[in-house]
Amino acid sequence: MLWGFVPALTWALVIAIATWPLRERCVRMGLAPAAAAALLTVAAGIVFVLPFIFFGAGIAREAASIADTIDQARHGQLDVPSWLPGLPFVGSYAADWWREHFSNPDTSKHLLDQSQSANALLWGRELGRWIVRRLVTLGFTLLTLFFLYRNGPAIAVEAQRLAVRLFGTPARRFGKYSFNAIRATVNGLVFVGLAEGVILGIAYAVCGVPHPITLGVATGILGIVPFGAPVVLAIAALTLVVMARTVTALVLLGFGLCAIFVADHAVRPALIGGSIELPFLWALLGVFGGLEAFGLVGLFVGPAIIAVALTIWREAAAKRSSPQ
Image 1 (cartoon, rainbow, N blue to C red):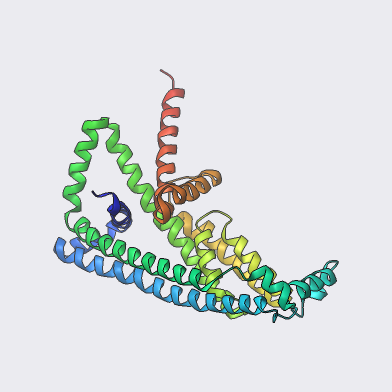
Image 2: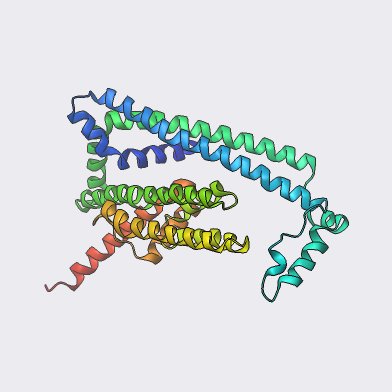
């Protein structure tokens, strides 16, 4: 019965755990639990909705531009870029291939004309359904979040009692590890990665990189993974190089690497602290394994689960190797 609401419940739990210190601060300032819950829930709704509207509109505009380019290629109206023949070794071959496939109406139509109006209509309907489902999930997430903020202490006590009864006294300690891991994952991995995406997205736009919002979103998502953001940064810089803007590419690359270095070696360790210590491989497996298993919320849940599992492993290994 509740299976369809699991994503909303999981999102609400992750957000509540990550932002619980704010709730405690509001209560210490004199706000009633219900008033603090209402205030933080409204703030969470604003924080989540406004960026998605902004970035969604930007990506939609850039998607329209990409669709126009594909349409030009389909009708054989896409000219050879001025920089393509100048590429070393392969420039002339690449230019000839481009003329044959994208500047020839017959060949380009055969190559690219795979979409029909009926398919486009079906895609539009599916997109509309997807948006409605996400809005419903967001609504139930905020509703659940309000009750977690308001009744969180009582829920935590009951959950702890149940866990101890089922798994013994270590459950209390491992529960604390899991909460710290989720909070550290959200603050240190996800928020820092998204901040990298915003900063570098602005840098892409200033430097004139094509489709800066799309690249910024990709930087933010891959910035959660170690060495993910530099990959997108390198692609953006390479794009400027092939556009014959080498100096701008070097400036972008230098600024981006400095921003990523500060984020990864100063901001991220300060936010994570000693809560979780994930090696590169396990962080990678946690992020992508979480995405595969739980969807987008797996970005938060996956690394937290890996962190708790590694904590249990290290604790058990330390006890095993200690002298009896």
